[in-house]
Length: 462
Image (cartoon, rainbow, N blue to C red; front, side, top):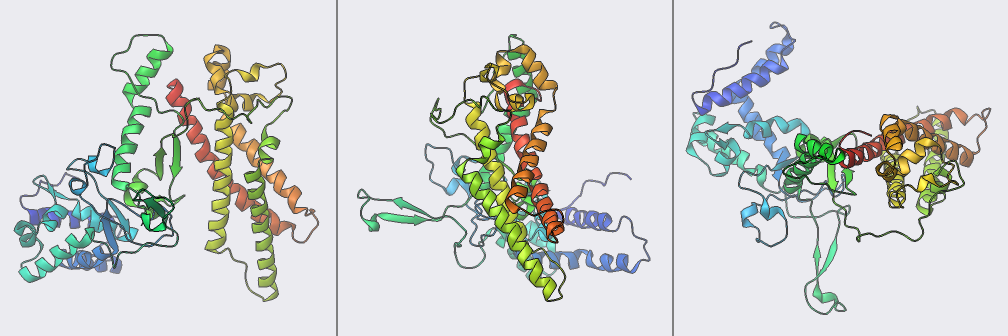
């Protein structure tokens, strides 16, 4: 198929976009198919534009969003031009350039309308033209000027908040001291923080380039080889990757979806801080029993056991009532949250042991299996080239995931105390597999973070 000719007018650009959408939708349809004929009518330019002007109300272009604070939060999102913000000394959204990229939230099924508004004509997007009510866009939308102006205004309203300003019970609140006396409640202003999504996106791109770009890889290789290197490179130590939206990052926002839900959090720890409570795990073959004794971990295990038991009771009630078994979204959300928090605890446990003196696993009393030494003593690679080579060539990430998942299954099995011949065993086994599948997904995210740390420190996969 030949490339389409560049449009000679804004109207041609619009019709070209609509035609391409139609071609994609009907690529595998016969022209006499009733579904093809129905789509052909829907993608007639004026029909599609009228529908787009209606559906655009389901979207909002934003610079600051609420859903990233909590996926179930429903309230006001904001679109604020960076130039209108106070130009302070700290890094913030006011630092964004004039050509910054806004984010979009709302119904993912209407994102084709946003793609339409991102079309550029002579260096300016259709959204910019709509916001300024430029006649060129109005003339291109429809021959009926009144109709075209209504559509242009509808497209421009994509940056406006929906309804009256509001927060939500699942949003966050911060009491901010605005005067000198912290004992006087009247001296506090209640803030409802929003997520600076338009700032987060270029920040993520900049850090990703510093971590995985070719320049950074060459620089890290030069460091390992003790070779000269011009230009320098940046390392961001103890970086945390926060996943927003789980398996559906598009439910948070468009830009979050483009990042696969990844959002970087810079470390804000005291320098050279080492907890006095952290000691090398000596005289044991695995650290997982030690991990399981942590108070937050014990509580999460209790919550998972209670979740399984609650599902079993619900199943019994449904069977007695003659109803089919079900899994509610609330149930899935709960065990999603619990396994995510358990993976977070494992990440914190990992970094606590990473802060120990590099090479602690060489102690004669260290009996950890090799994969756990690779996992918990990465600093030994700087001291022991043979260890570094073996670690790099091993598949320790997968082994650790299997060991942790096995530990969780054993722990839950002991807590449930259900024998193989118990009538409830099959239901329990099904529920625990749901938990384990979700936990393995969380572990994959954790291992991605550890793998990324190895790449940033060593310049190549561990």
